Image (cartoon, rainbow, N blue to C red; front, side, top):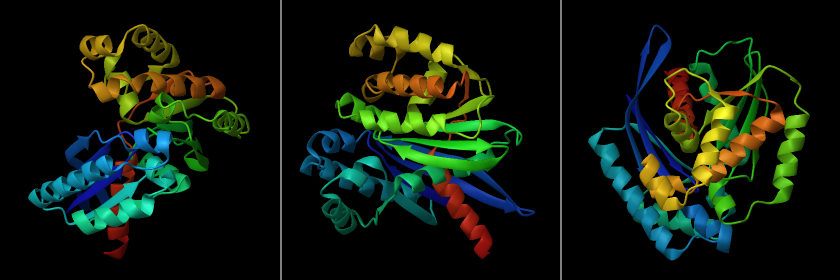
Length: 293
């Protein structure tokens, strides 16, 4: 069975299609297709408070295109979820109504807690040390989700208004950093933490550092890359590191967020498993189908 997840984020809209199989009570999930369209809803919301008519049109066209892609792949079930930018948009009801009317998609708006929970749901699929202590750090365009895991159990999770597009717009609230710092300092685990980094930016950082699958990315390596990237202009980053324009700008604030959170938590190393919200959405759908079957 093929399942699809549409992640309507602040920096881009993604369609992930995966094939789910069950054998002897175990699920196997394989990626079939990933389509990313750089519709930056957060650029509107974090500056004007609303999603512009132009970006609503782009969103509708993107969702229509996703219908065709899902049809070609014979997707049997899907879910479309929006995160930080849509949560804050003053015209969210208008946008959702327009997309439903013109593209035949019903969009769910995830709360920050729901977003953090879906990202955490990937934990069970990563074959991690159940005696280890981890902090999930998912940096998006509008928000950052943190989840503390101790010995295989989710201790707590929270969403903070710390994001790359929000930062570029100059709309990061100092109180958001104060809240994140307090959250990290009151964790019930004080040592031996390893970060689990998710999101497109950390995947790019991992790749630019020449890392191989299952290798750890160190805080020192993130700082080193950040120093190099920050010394360049946008065009130089694009050409030197072969980055997309919509990645070359947000990777700078992404590095800043990852670095500051790791420093606040006393974390020196990070795992980068290349999973995220969309994977969690599909895993949840697959688990629900398994229960009902």
